[in-house]
Amino acid sequence: MQQNLIFKYFPELTARQKEQVEQLEGLYRTWNSRINVISRKDMDNFYLHHVLHSLGLARLISFKPNTKIMDAGTGGGFPGIPLAILFPETQFYLVDSIGKKIKVVREVAAALKLQNVEAAQIRAEEVNRSFDFVISRAVTDLEVFAQWTLRKVRPRSFNPLPNGILYLKGTGVEGEINRVRKIKKLKVSTYPLERFFEEDFYKTKQIVHVYR
Image 1 (cartoon, rainbow, N blue to C red):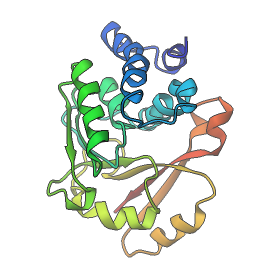
Image 2 (image 1 turned 45 degrees about the vertical axis):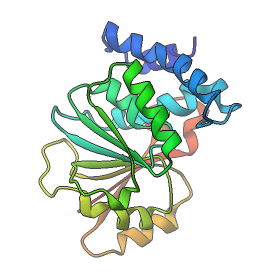
Image 3 (image 1 turned 90 degrees about the vertical axis):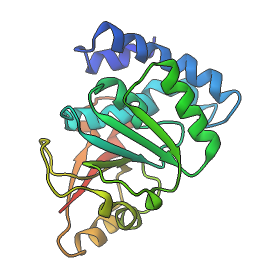
Image 4 (image 1 turned 180 degrees about the vertical axis):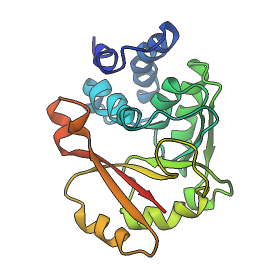
């Protein structure tokens, strides 16, 4: 039972949250057979490669109620959907430019009865809202992503980390990080995911936090 991997690292989940986590694979297998949002081979490692990876952010920060988060380039709903399960009092706005992917997000959120998820077919740079955090799983070069999204981040923080970008990225991207560090008034912190998870998959994964 792959979902036990999630319960191993998040034993505090409520019965309802555990039920939602258990539903995820079936929902994505069903929708993936109609609209391919996850490689079919990767579905065999669904909880390791997608759900737990998304929840790496939850090991770094516990979002406070009423935090507003945009998941930019969400694809089929990662990292936003798993995080929305863990933080039901946090508001998630999941965006992607591809309509069929947003259809999957909406259907999965509805099936899980996630009241804290809104999804829209729109490019992240065109969103006209402000957020406490922008999250994503490495949709593009970090410097480009920062230029697209940082202006949408509110200046005043009330969470344990300063408001900014939380980017799930592979290791070996020091060039991207250094370019961002050279941008005036921007700061970058990195957090290896092997600090939080013992599986080999996470030895080459990290969270990059970009903030002012």
